[in-house]
Image 1 (tube, one colour):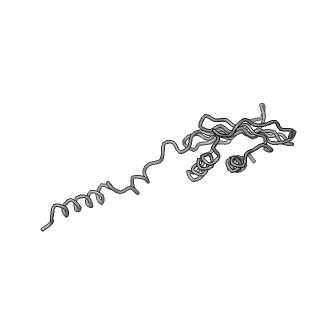
Image 2 (tube, rainbow, N blue to C red; image 1 turned 135 degrees about the vertical axis):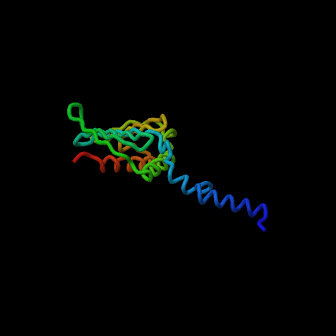
Image 3 (cartoon, rainbow, N blue to C red; image 1 turned 120 degrees about the vertical axis):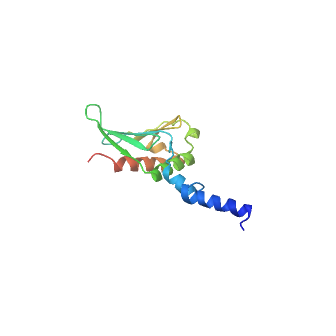
Length: 151
């Protein structure tokens, strides 16, 4: 004779086996987060041999990289892996973009200039005036740009 609790356990097991209910692994596998990362805009410009690189990463991980100057702009489109997006989100959380103040004066003539916009906050910095906590984010974004530059 099966007790009431035993019957409940059997019903739950049958439900999980036949319908996939109660199992988090199958539910998570079929679902992708709608918003993996807030939009990111990153611009790198300047340098001794001037460059202009603009990267936009959308919420869903789709990205567009625009390189060149007016009259000769190339656009490369790609999608970032979820692991890369998670790493970026962690980097931005650690950097605390909203708490980074305005840039000070710089006398670097051939430096790269960076502009980063994330969660409604924009930071403009020359490469000689980047706070330590922002360096990992710039390194990540630069690596994304460098790996998708037109050949």
